Length: 205
Image (cartoon, rainbow, N blue to C red; front, side):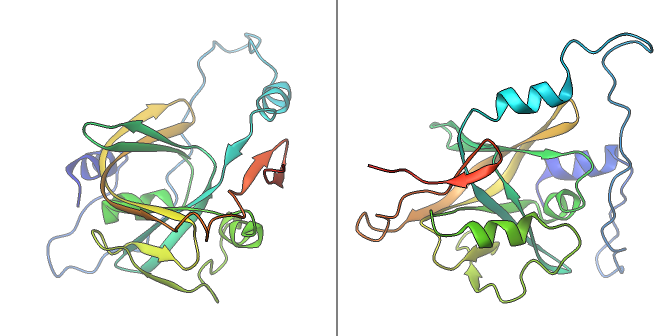
């Protein structure tokens, strides 16, 4: 388990048992008090307007997966990006109230599954909270960490947790890349799955 994730969980109030001790089921972290303005002070930006304007920025779509003592887990994620070439680092953002993140943190590793244009339904399945997201989903084990590597994704990045930073109501998770791969250009002609203004899309000629 990555030391960074252990420190995060301890700071959040989670306890790690000794070897052989039964582990409690993962639970959602309490929603933190994240106000950055004084009581009664008007927010500088309306949240609805913030979402509307930022929705004009098209992003790729991924599914971040991990495997802990309770089995596979994962969530749909738009906020994935490359961060550093030397050392090879990537990053994603996750809500601090996420019920999936504590399991990824305990695993200490994750696989970013980059989705293709025809995988909108797969993304929607991993965006649902509380459901069995892996029902009917075929996957193998990523080579470095054993995290779920979903079948038929155009590309994947297998990582160990390198650092976790606070960013308002989200966490910024930095992963050190241990392995990665992509399909051949011929297999990836359909292009990436994109998300823009609340809907999926794809490149067109």
